[in-house]
Length: 418
Image 1 (cartoon, rainbow, N blue to C red):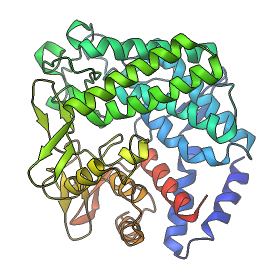
Image 2 (tube, rainbow, N blue to C red):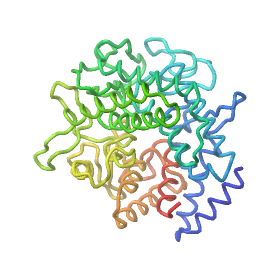
Image 3 (cartoon, one colour):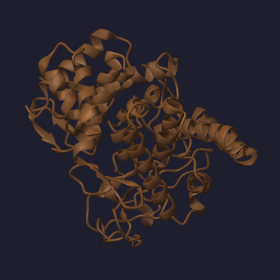
Image 4 (cartoon, rainbow, N blue to C red):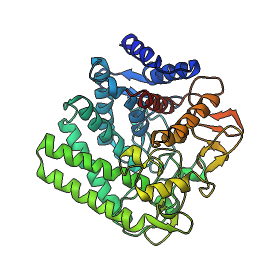
């Protein structure tokens, strides 16, 4: 199967007129498949994130998404994607508040976190997007192939668990979820005895942590609530078309509309320079943060996750803000300019944010410029890293970050029209 796919990728690379770009595309595309996947005896597939030996619900979806285009013609690819979904659903049923899991109940990971975690769990940082990504992967597999076997009873049960969590976290003060890390940085633990900053009801659903795994300052994380709206639309469609379950369909639609109304009411700020833009986080009491973080979902990724098009006026304004020095995590240097993250050092830009900038652009010059930056900042490794210093790309974080490689491959596939 690797040989078949490798031949296919080599064939696609012939559409590229730059030898280094060809090499980076082939290596990045195959990276997840060659280095991070393990088929297990129960038919599921375990996917490590790269240099961290755990499976993130978010990363595992991002790592595998670029293979969806080949699921119809290569049966083994479809089986791998199905296996990933099966394992993701198993994990959600074990603990829907966890973001990363072990291959077996070996208690690996952050064993000193409070409260004590399940031995299956690597880390129990609650992030809305962790519950979005497995639904997205199953939905996209259906749309790409027409295949529906992934929508099993276990999948339906997991949907109900997700809906229950999201409704519970609309009223976070009544939730039992807390998280404290004794050994780690301040961004790894929630204040207020593990409950996080107090929030007011908005209709949105609360998140303890961002996709970067850093804690939220204000609990209503706007891009993750946007992703929840998109995924609730997927659930609504699955309930209608696959399960024929009017109650599940109505429940999903009602929650989707409530969260959407919360975003519109609390998540849009009138900026004196840019006009109406989306905030990054709000608390429902009138406090908000204007910024963007490189990890996905982000505000920059709004068209990529399917919440709005790149022509939406508020997105256009928000994009201008994000790609300016008014965003506290936007950096410009000798080798690059783009969005970084408080998760990584100052003046370190994330290639993932550059890739998302290209994936959400219609400007060929902008896309070409970003491709050239990616080619020039790999530190001669032919792989994509988590982040790099805009003044010295040989200073970078994470040698082996499979999702970034997969996202780069996804960009190339879009550019060549696959």
